[in-house]
Length: 200
Image 1 (cartoon, rainbow, N blue to C red):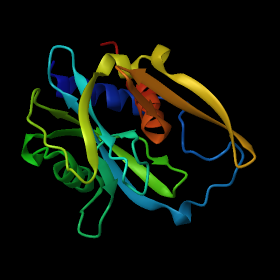
Image 2 (image 1 turned 60 degrees about the vertical axis):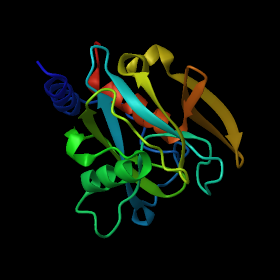
Image 3 (image 1 turned 120 degrees about the vertical axis):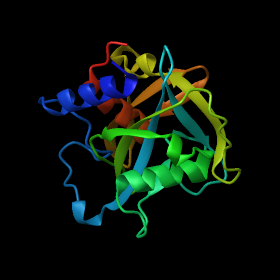
């Protein structure tokens, strides 16, 4: 079975089961204003190698939103984008020069609502290993790869509690090779872990 087939099977099987997911950055019990959501999409590029990895970026420190944070390539769904998949592919090409014709889309996973008002759809895809990726100087400070089995291992998902704007908030972080993956990106990884139940 190819990596694409394994991921498609795992994603379909995971979505057929009841699973407790992280739905957004809101505090438990807070009402969610879904009418205010701005559509966005991220690409979850899985490298097709013996030990598959996931390509992530670290955003530049000069960006207005989420500066310096680790993120999947992605962004807002523009009017010219046909859907979330098209937006994710476009953004990945713009941010890290990932050619869309080298991407095999596996499928979409569960949307996640950020505290900044975005409804983010993760698009899982498989890409060839060792592509030469060129980060956009304006948006991306670094491109790196983390083993898929490490990211999806729930033992690496650390839950952190903080007080923010008078509320107790909880978020996940994943630490790897000096990189701190947290917030919405970590939450989407946690959801994928719960959906895929990846055995490596």
